[in-house]
Length: 455
Image (cartoon, rainbow, N blue to C red; front, side, top):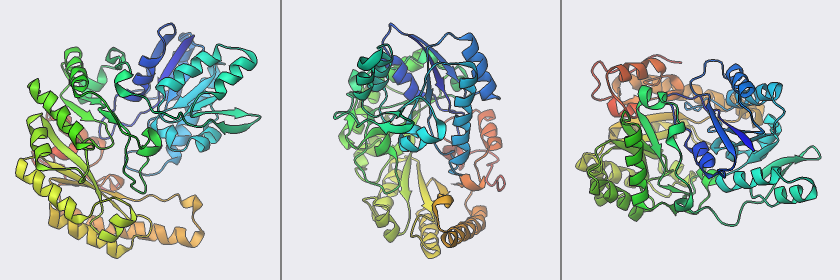
């Protein structure tokens, strides 16, 4: 079978992201199939570009990767859904091949997206094994082929015009059994323009944060890779793409389990690793030994999902830690020279304006290396009119409070308001020869961009 793999993600703020998930699926597709990859990230007119590529690329199946439902500034999901619907409609205009969609974005709400986007098939969660089995099933005709489809875990399709989803597989995939993604397929512009590569050391998250979608995407059962295999992959990337200047570890939380994270750091230390990297971290399982090992292994900083500086809100969000643990992590980072960037989400369900004020006071007192301030986005269509008005008014009040804060806090990033978060800022950083996440450079960048305007 000839398979046309399409990476739909075009988000480039703060950086363009290598389509790692789709590359894993491609690597796990049996070699007897022809595989071609088209990445829409750098296309100005994605629908037209996709049509032209499909017209000149022989294919029997189109596999579309959907990385995110929301944009990076959390401004909402409607535009992104319309974009992917446009891609599928564009493909239909030039191709009769079945379309299957998957990826992290699709896995968040698979049944709903099947209804909105109308692909032929959808795969939720880990796609490597399921996609390979789908390809096999599509080569079988009649009742045997239908039975094969019924046996594929987390496969969604239309039966009699109704969306039907199969139960998930009883066991998750073993990370070390998966083929390593083929980086030769990656567009050179990821490394030449942005200098960032991605690597995954584990899947699954056992935490139960109220809003988080990672368990929907990867499950709650942790599956780790051998630390040596992680270091091998990073070395291989550098050998193939020496222009790479930074790695981002895409794990939902790198430091959990703590022993595995420490061993990954040790594997990098053993190889005298020098290319800087960053990751997501959690106050749980964060200790001085881990911080010291990370610094020795080349870690340039960590992003922490602290979410709130209000104890009641942290409990409501089921974070599993309080403000004392956030402070302890910050003190450890400060003492070991490890830059820390804390993300806070303001205006979550049940949160009052007083709670928001307490969080802002907490952030000012904490004074981390950097802070990212997000504003909770409601599904306004699902709210009663009176509640919708109330929630919109709260958002306006939060924006006013943040606007008053920004002149005194040049190390704060506020994506939904365009503060230290727009294309102009990133271009200035790149021209200055700087790489990695923006927050690393706000304190030291000459002519710091600070507030760039309210979007």
